[in-house]
Each structure stands twice: as C-alpha cells, then as structure tokens.
Image (cartoon, rainbow, N blue to C red; front, side):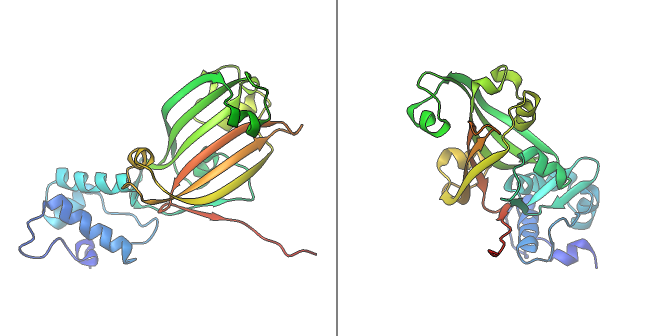
Length: 247
C-alpha cells in the first residue's frame, strides 16, 4: 500500500480547494484518526510529490502549514514526523531546553522582549523583595523542532544574573553559571483559553484551550529568585505527576 492510499488520497472529485489544502486535510484527518501515529515519519517531499502528482512547492506549503499548527515537526537531517505530545513531569525541576533535549527534540527560543526595571507591587510580594529592588524580565516563545510550544514570561531578581543579556538559549543554564539556579519550586497549573496575543504567538486560534503554569523558584537558602508564567499549547503537552500512598 502506498502512502497516498494509506491516508486516503486527496480531495474527492469536484473538490476545488487548492491542492496544498487538500493534502493538509488528508494528513490532518489521518493524524486525528490515528492512521498516522506520534513520531511516524512522512515520506520525503519529492516522494510525496510523485505519489500525489503535485509539485514539491505544493507539498512544502502543505507541510509548512501543519508544522505551524504543531501537528508535524521537522528534525534536521532526519525529515518530517508526526508530532508527539510532550510529557512534562511535575516531580522534576527542569528547564524547557533540558526537557526537549532529553526527548531528542531541538529547542529554540524567540525573544519577545527582555528588559530591566524595578519590582512591581505584585512581584514584590511574590519574590519577597523590597520595593525598588531591581529585576530582569524576559518574554520568549519556546519552540521544539520548529513548532511553537509555549510562551513564557519570567521575572528574575537582578542579583541572580550579571546583566539582562546574560541569558542565551537556557535561562536555567545562565542561572546555574552564577550559582543561582532554583533547587525548589512551587507550581500551579490551570486551564485557560488563549487571549489574542498568546494565540497569535503560538499560531493557534484565539480562545483555544491551553495550560497556564505559574512557578516560583527558590534557592537553597529559601530566597525566591524566579517567577514565571508559561502558557502551553493544550494540544501538545501532557503534565504528569507521580503520587505515592502515605506510609
């Protein structure tokens, strides 16, 4: 059975949708119906073009759209795959970069903004800092294999970093370099509907379901050093926690 036969071909006779839309629809339905499962590899673009008798440009346009939706991922040197949902454990304090690398995925961040200022009244209470204390603020889109996964807004007490430009790919790596990586955190998870800003940044429709994680990170001496709000795509993440019975 060819790949085209496996996913049911393109649109029915008389379907006047653009060919890239027809291919997207066929692939999307195959993923939703579990004909294609997580981490399944797609044929090379030239092979898809040959099977469906369409141009490689049309194939690339169709795949680009599904990558933006988070249904497919591209892995450098390996090809295009059906995206697998990411399981994030609540029992381990790890960074987004570490989580993605441990799963064989390529993390990337796109800066929305980074700035320095003074704590707001709310941040002062959350971080236990005196009014007027300097802080650094970071806003980023987090990607895995080229697909947007989360939007993060972080405030860090300025004593923990040498400058606002000290953060590269990983915030926790930068904090570890100064000896201020959190060793403990309190996290709160709740379901949200994405506002227009988050939806646009993540490439999903407004009011799509998502997950908001609010985290406070603490140093060994008990001081709070980080407060982060992370908006995760609901179609890409599962959060798990190991529970043990009381002895």
